Structure formats: C-alpha cells, structure tokens
Image 1: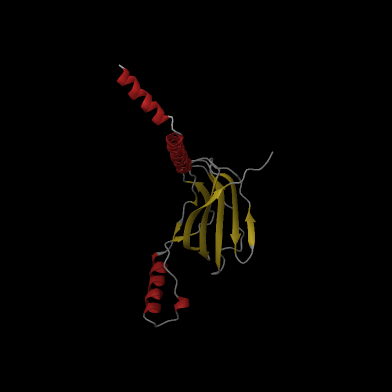
Image 2 (image 1 turned 90 degrees about the horizontal axis):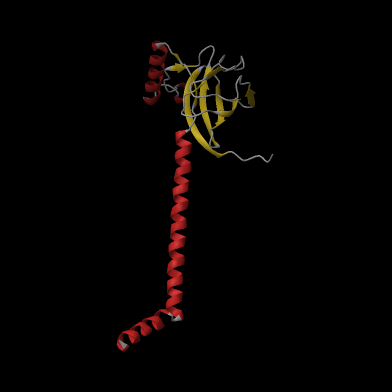
Length: 197
C-alpha cells in the first residue's frame, strides 16, 4: 500500500509542476479561442441565411415584348459589325424587351422590400416618386417615370434601391436605350446603417 501512495504522490507532484500547469492552461485557452472562432463563423452563416430567406427582389413587371422584326434587324447589325461592314458603334445587342407604357414595380422576392428609392441616371440624377415606399411579397405599385425618358434613343439607367427586413440593402439596375432594355442586374450594397433615435 505504501507503493501505491508513493505512485499517487509522484503523479500529483508531476501535475502540480508549474510547467505542466502552464501547458494545460495554454491548451485550454486554445480550445476556448477555437470554439469562439467556430461560433462566430456559425453566427455569420446564420445571418447570411436569414438574408437569403427574406431577400426582396424588386423588378419591373411585366415587360413589353418587342416586335420580332426589330430584334432581327438588331441581330443583323451585330453580324455586319462583326464582319467589319459597318461601324461597330452602330450595332447594339438585340433585346426582346421594352419598357411598357405604364411600368409597375413588383416585389418578386421572398421578403418585404423596405425604404424603396428609385432614381433615373441620365447625366444627372433624378429621384422618381414611389407611391408605396414598402412592398410586401407579390405587391406592386405603378412607377411614374419622367416623360422625357424613352422618347429618344439615348442611354439612361433606372436604379431601384431597397432594404430587406434583416437590414441588407440591394439595388436593381436597368440600362435602357430609349425604351429598349440593354442590361439588367441586381447587387447587394451591404447593411443599412442604424440611425440613432
């Protein structure tokens, strides 16, 4: 029995050594830091998932289809420009959609769109009045554009900025040449800044 007590006493002396205690402390600290880092990653993924689950998407709906002959003519000018038979600046990519007479802004996303702002960029920036600054899923509102937009073949851009319920800001951007849609895109702008009350 004295041998067992002696072995336990040796083990306690070994574990009580300051170097061993320091190693155990460093290992414990490493485990806590690793756990905190993993928890932060999980929280970030959860926020991103909430953004995607409640993401609004504002779009012009419905689009007005273009005449088939106009699309065919645009395709022809592109081919002539590629062959070097006409100036490439005269050719434009074919588009099957035009801005309708009374465009509507519709929320086609999964969550409500808040704080909607619409701007027309055509050398200057013009705010466009929006009847409803918030749109629920599937809800739409008429978009009142200035009469000068679409009357000629000049390029102009329609930017629609909005927020989701999680605070993420988005923009839907349409580039027009007259009434013809030349490009459409959407992007995230980051989180909305919290305003002090």
